[in-house]
Length: 195
Image (cartoon, rainbow, N blue to C red; front, side, top):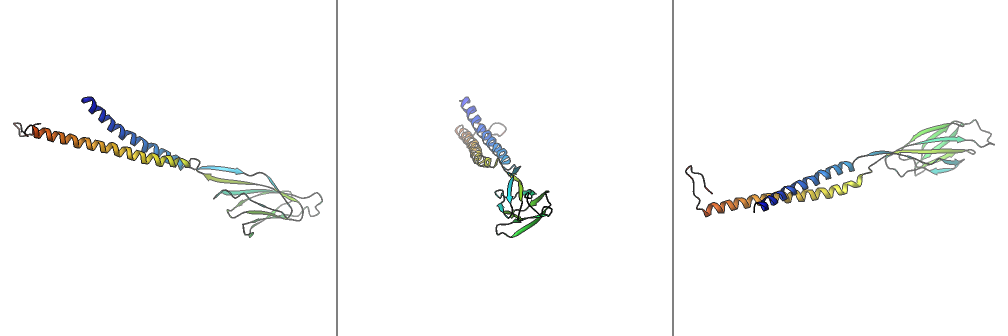
């Protein structure tokens, strides 16, 4: 009889403990899921010929993007000492930036999120460029799903453990009341109910 009571008490407390443990685990997973990490994407070096246009890398949302460019004149280019112009455009082909490149020099510029196209405004020569994008990710974002499930499960298990404790307490009070009534509700010499 006593061992059954001990088992029930341990079961109630273990349910509370398990429920709280599940919720603590869920909180840890939730915090891990919102951690952000900075990543750098370096595009391959591309070549753009005179008068040509190319689409820039745009798959990363809210990223900081820069582009490093170098102009190379053709061997038979007579205007070899002139600066060359590179144009950055958006999707509607509106000019966002006009960049003047020095002859055989490199230049790095920052791009905004509207930049979609790069165009070389020359009759001869070519341009090599490489785009670098710095963006933020949440690599553990999917941990929010088990965190949600563990939270709900932990709440249910904790509630069941508390409910069982309340039921046990009420049953014990009820048993004591029945026991008191069965012995006639006698009082001792000091006026205290005797069970």
